Image 1 (spheres, rainbow over the protein chains, first blue to last red):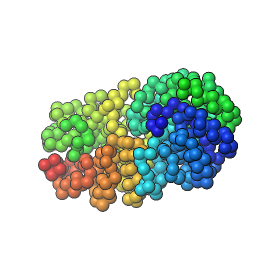
Image 2 (cartoon, rainbow over the protein chains, first blue to last red):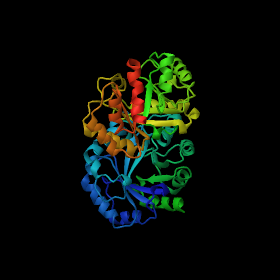
Image 3 (cartoon, rainbow over the protein chains, first blue to last red):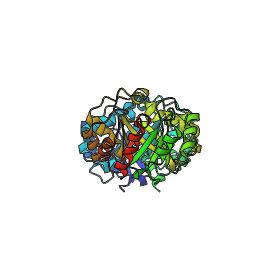
Image 4 (cartoon, rainbow over the protein chains, first blue to last red):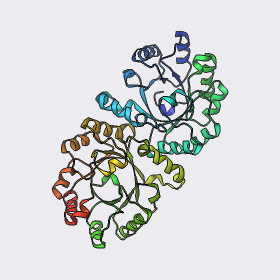
Length: 228
Length: 228
C-alpha cells in the first residue's frame, strides 16, 4: 500500500542504531504499512544507504524522514520533511528546507515529498532539544498547532511527537477531532499492543520506534492489533 | 469576482492613512478586482472598521490582510494571513498565528482564511524591519521560498513584497515560472500604468498601494492596462 494517507501502522528505524538481519526481516515482514528511516542524531549517508539497501530486499514501502541534508539519498518511496511548528528557531520551521531547496530543488520529485507539521511535546527529548522546540505546551496550544497544520498550511501530516514518552490520551483524542484532511500521526512511547490499540483508536497512523530495539516481540505485536 | 485566484489587480489601502470619500469612491469603482485593507503600523480596530464600512458602500470584494490580532473584525470577504517565510523570528512565520488560533480558532471560518507566504525583499522597508525579515536575498533564495510555498506548504498565495521599491523584472519572471498552483502576488513600487503592465505580464496579481496616496490618477490608471 503506497498511499501514506491509508497507513495505520508504521515502524521507525534509526540508521544510527544496530539491528540484526533477522530482526529487520521480522520488522519488514510484520504486516506494517511502511518503514520510516529517521533519527535525531548520528544519521549519515552511509548508515542511511546501508539501512535502505537492507530494507529494499522486502516489499514494504520505505520512507526517508529527512533529518539532515547530507544523508538524503535516492531510492525511497517517499521523503517526509519535518517542519517543527513549535520550534523557536526558524531554521527548523522553514530555514533548513529553504537551503535544501535552493541547493537540490532541481533534483526533487515533489510528488514524493510530504511535509509533516511536527509538534514536539516532550521537553526532555533529544528531538525537542535539537530543534529548539518550545515543548512545554498546554493542550490548547497543541490543538492550535493542529488546526494550523490543517487549515493554514494544508499539510498532509500533523505529527504529534511524544518522543520516548507515552502520550496523554485525552489530548490525542482531541487532536483527532480537529483534523480532517490532514493525516494524524502519533509517535512516542508505544511499548505493547494495548498501548498501540489505544492510540490507534484516535490517530490515523501510529509510529512504533524505540521498542524495536528493546523488545522486538512486543514491537511486532503492535502490528496485528492495529492492522486487524 | 470573489475568487481571489482570478484576481489580476488589487488595491491595498492602509487604515492608518487618510483617504477622502471621493478618492475612495474612485478606487472602489475603478474596476479593480478587490481592495485589500492592511498596513504595517498604526492599524487599529477603529480605523479598520471605519475603512471597512466605507468600502462596503461599494460592491468590490474586500479583504482584510491581518497585521495584528487586535484589529480583526467580521465583515470582510476574505482574511489574508501573512506568514513571512524569510523572517528570522518564528512569531512571524507561525507563532502569532498559533496564538490567534488558540484564542479565536472557534470563531474562524476557515473557508475565508487564505495564507500568504510572504517573501520580503526590501531590507529597508518597515515591513522587513517589523517582521525581522532576512531580506537581503539572492535570486536563488527567493526562488527556493517560492518553491517551498507551492510544494512544501501548498500555500494559496506567494507574495513577493518589494514594499515601496519597484522589483527586479528578471526575478519576477523567474518566480512566475516556478509557481503553478500557488497564486503569485507582486507588490511594491508600482507608480504608473507602464510599471503595472510590466509586472502583470508575470505576476498573477499585482498589488497597487502607496501611489494611491501620492497620485490617485496614476493609481487608477493601473487598473485598465491590467484588466483591459
